[in-house]
Image 1 (tube, rainbow over the protein chains, first blue to last red):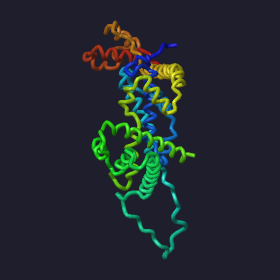
Image 2: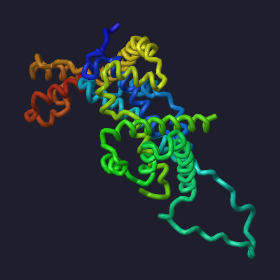
Image 3: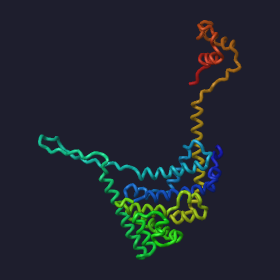
Length: 206
Length: 133
């Protein structure tokens, strides 16, 4: 039998070898799942994805690559495969439910249904879904608030983010603190939000 | 920020910042990577123990894919006999032997004057060398 065609450790030596590359791809897959999961139907399906399987699926596509000489390019392509698989699931359009709206043949006096106003109208179904999603996050924020004392820096930070502030320097100024002091507070609140999101998604899945 | 879905947008900001970026993952050393994966519920010991098996499986897949590509390439490459050592007289002799008379050889009406080396080889391959099934 032919000897190993590809030296995977050499291919990924810029990432610290094959084992490190696989571990980094696993970490990346976990991050993508967290970011693309949500309370909507597709988001909940994404939450159930297995990061390890995503990595294995990407690696199995190594046989399709025209060249395995540039390890950096191969690694980026593997990352793209992982993101594409998750994004495809997240963006999948649901099959519309077909509903029978007319039975039998129309008679002379049967009422006519007017055609709805045309395109560029937002889909009511999509709007409803976004509202449900926002309600999910509104509940999440209510719970997030309860984790901190009123008027604590974390409490005020959450309020500013909800008000639409995004710039680190501006939020720090509103809070009356140094941006360096702001960073650990911000990270704490972010991790708490992520933990709550995962907890709530698990409850929805049950 | 769109007021209508402000909770979704605000949550997006917090969640994005709770996670390492691509660059941060790439920059992680082994201990940092192990710590992150463990915090996400990954059994790092198990992950490491599966690496050798994964490498073998991938090597096998690559070998199989390579063998298939080579077989496909062999099936599609026409084997060209090397006729470089044959002279024009030898081509003509073989063609006369097949067709019986000089006049019966295809392109005889041109009196062979316009034929070049490539034409002779082509004639020879078309009429003398048996085609592979």
